[in-house]
Amino acid sequence: MYTPHTQNPRTLSESSIGCQRRNMSASTTLYVRHTSKCSHKDRNYRRCGCPIWFQRLRRRWSAETNNWDEALKKAAHEALKAEPLKHITVKEAVNPYLIKRSKKFNDPNKAPYNDRWLLKDGSKRQPSVTAWAARNNFARLDQITAAAMDRWRNTWVFREESYSMKIHNAVIKAFFTWAVRFDYLESNPFDKLDRIVVTPVPTLPLTSEEFSKLLSCTDACGPACTQTMTTIILLMRWSGLAILDASCLRRDGLGLDNRLRTYRKKTGEYVHVLLPAFVADQLRSHGNAHPDYFFWNKSRFAEPKAQANSVGRRLRRIYDKAGISPRGAHRLRDTFAVENLNAGMLIEDLAMLLGHSNTTTTWQHYAPWVKSRQIKLDGAVERALAAQLNHSTGNMGAATVQ
Image (cartoon, rainbow, N blue to C red; front, side, top):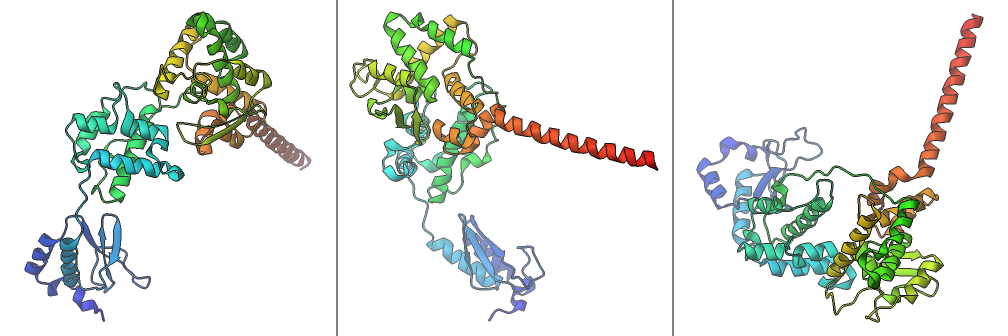
């Protein structure tokens, strides 16, 4: 039975406490878990006789005593028999994490594009975590420090208004959080880094005049690419697909009912969207060297990213000839989203068409364009103003009678 007097620090041997503390693991914390009947709330107060608990590596368990000296002995014993951290290499850690991120596919190559690109693939301009660690001689995952990660993050080059740096940071931080949860690391080095703040930039859809001018300038890439770029522009405008998904679209993704059934390579979310008949017919009539894809020739570009970059360069030349600024493939996706919202579509339905994993991203970018929402707000304000004016008029009339 636990007795309150055992918690009195005067009864403890100071030399015994010092010895036990030296044997304890540095990451093990002792604290008092006060009962509901106890009037104390401070977890470091130990004279009340409440039970003592341990905390180590985000795990908590009872010491099964309220004697601080006894709890110290148990903590030292736990530290001696505790399983050491698993010394795993960066490559060995990335693969099971990507398998976990692929969810039901159980295949690292089926993980979301951002995870695969930032952790394993990368590029010359932006190396992956695996390539960066090898370049800096970080063989094991636990050798990577917060200072090294901070220096690496300072080399990232993005536009000030771009969300890419924030996305990069979140993906890599999630990987290290997973490593801590599975005892490959004691702490997450990203927890010590400053937060990344991005100033949001308003969405810029194309006007009908700009879209027509864009279609009329597809010959900027040469006669051989005119039909291809016209088809891609129509596809992105009327499907809302991102450039990576549109440029690598499979032929079996288009059904006989003119409905696209594909999934976003960036998020892994499935997309189902009905195309206008003239866009679907244009797609079917488009020839390509590879029988499985509408635009992607794997013998020329082995990776989807390389194919998307090629299409992006052509689009920028078309923007330049049309004299439209700012230029960007994403403006076609924005046009699809905004035109649907202006036609009365619910933003929750738009999120499904765009392949967003949740509606937060959709609200963040497209909420200002919801006309029906603004009309409802205007109607509510008008009714409130009318009620206030009527109430004020009635009060004035009553004051006049008096």
